[in-house]
Image (cartoon, rainbow, N blue to C red):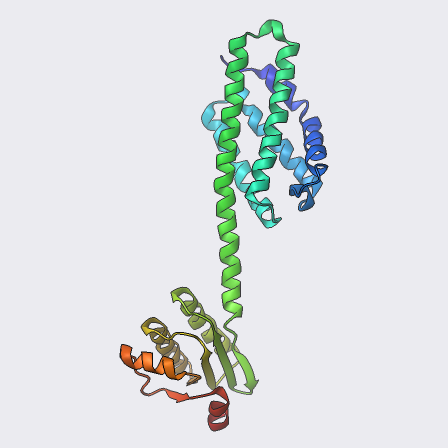
Length: 274
């Protein structure tokens, strides 16, 4: 069918009107939406950019159009995820924008109907719908990636905060471990504990395991690595809180704590060694 700069110019000339209609519809529908979580001025600009980008289907090659959509999706998806927008809300908003956009195209076709055939209308209808299908799929991919990245960052922060080295007096600190310890968390504990022990200039670190439900070979290996690394920077490690059932499991698995000072409770360890 060829390029249609006339349709492009018509829609671009009404992008501000389309944005206002979008905001009015979505913000006034009584349901939770992106407008309760984001800045309306920024959303208006994001909508304008989307309209400009979608409208490139009338003047650009398909690959160029998709490249611009990918750039828009990556930027906006990250912003909406940070604002707390859900994927359900996103799809709902794209449906509204798609309807408004096609109504604008139909309005132009009807106003210039002498230059259009039914085949023309069907062609542009399919093109617009294909464009919005691609936008929704592309945005969903970037939305999921942004969501995973934020969750990963939050999980890392939670994990780091859950392994604090607490100073009790000059040169002495406590590392109370709580909950299950997987490979990732074990690595974080090793790295952060060494950093904190060095920063606090510790001579002795009490590692309490009373709130750790399972000590398997992996956890034991990581603990040994931590104790060895602490020893290399001049910090002596004392273990406490190894419960009877954990001790029994350790024996069955062949895990040995020879050469490592242990006490049944943190209180006992502090009274004896600090």
